[in-house]
Image (cartoon, rainbow, N blue to C red; front, side):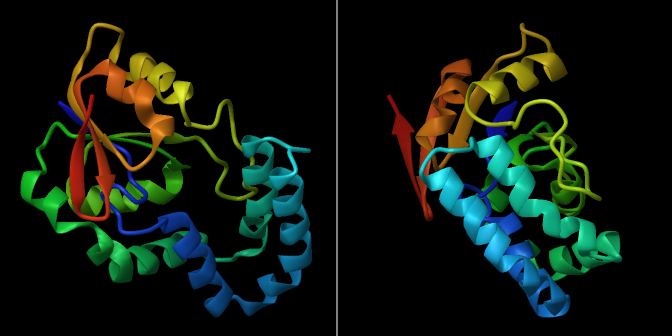
Amino acid sequence: MTGYDFDKTIYDGNCFVDFYFYCLLRRMYIVLLLPYQAMIGLMYIIRIIDRKICKQLFHCYLFFIFGKENLITKFWRTHIQKVKQWYLHQKREDDVIVSATPKFFLQPACAMLGVKYLIATDMDMRTGKINGDNCYKESKVKFFKQFFGSDVKLKAFYSDSKSDIPMMQLAEKGYFVFGNQIKEYK
């Protein structure tokens, strides 16, 4: 079993950010939330709020998006091609995606890719509220062990970020992905 982070690892960019801009173009009224979202971003930068609170508050725009399921499906039809070729060439049926991106948002992409194991942030699609922990840093290991049990080991874990070193340490080998370059973590 091989594990992968999603954004900037097997997907070229951040898919949930791409979706936000996709929504801005199709539901332009959410532009009215930009001052609020800018304030949330500033509060995160100056460390008044943590990552989880920032993520929840920023994604309040989801509450105002009607027809989300349809919009998400349309998004993935046009953006699935941003999955990197190196991943498609080595993809296996027992791959697991472990991501901080919301689970409801990644499920259609995983279905299109034929990935049956997905561990991701449990965010309410309607409100943007995160149930439990954000699937980030050590929480990824916790969620992985809850899903598979503590005896399951990964052959490898791929990520673009040092925040995933705990997942790499759970694997026999870890790899950092920089664009399409892959370097082993030692």
